[in-house]
Image (tube, rainbow, N blue to C red):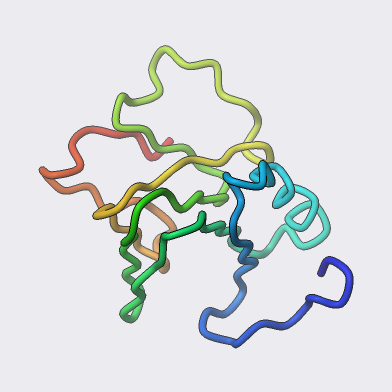
Length: 119
């Protein structure tokens, strides 16, 4: 999708994945890919972080964050008072221990995670 990087290992279908995004200040680069391929789920992973995927459930492990580009928004604080950008310009962070339902494309909210807003 960028240069000659169009096909990865094939672990996840219909997903665009980037790495080292926060340390390299590349967290906005995913918007270029999703602008060209809006049907894809965007997922970026920072250094020293990984994702464990079992069927449709994904869990963040490691030291920093995974960023989700699904057109929605989620925050532990909610979004009631936030002025959100349009869906094609949104991303949000998941930290170690957070889980995400890949089929429903939404954060799995547990008592450990607390509030949030899947708006």
